[in-house]
Length: 161
Image (cartoon, rainbow, N blue to C red; front, side, top):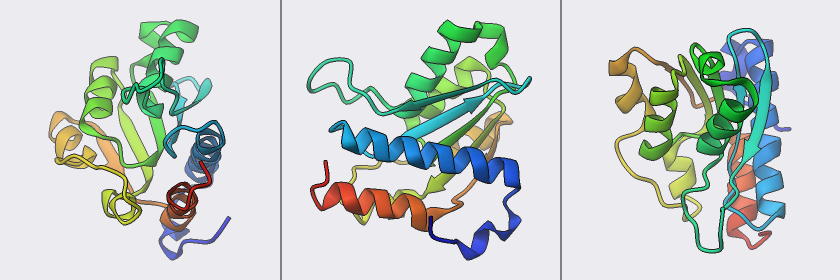
């Protein structure tokens, strides 16, 4: 993947999980979905990867972060989500931010900014994740590895969907 000058401050563990989220976003595009992926890491280190995946044709709520929370809830139970970190290939939307808040996620790390998504014709909704979650005590870090995420958005926009 391309290097991001800002990534010098990104820990190796965070970079690993964020790259996995970006890989999941590429899988979403290959499956005909919007270009987003997420990795949820529980406080005790268990991981779960998800991608955008509509439940039914036309469903616009099958976002990667929400799918990761739902899948982790089913796999690990509600208590395991408390203190978890979600790594997202794009800045989470308000719906996903609310989902992560109610699930007890403690930290969100994202790759692509809302501006990078909008540049490729991807709808975004304000406020951003940081504006929603930081006042609630959830740490939000990003954008990191944005060129890598933006490349997937560009491929999606170019019709590689």
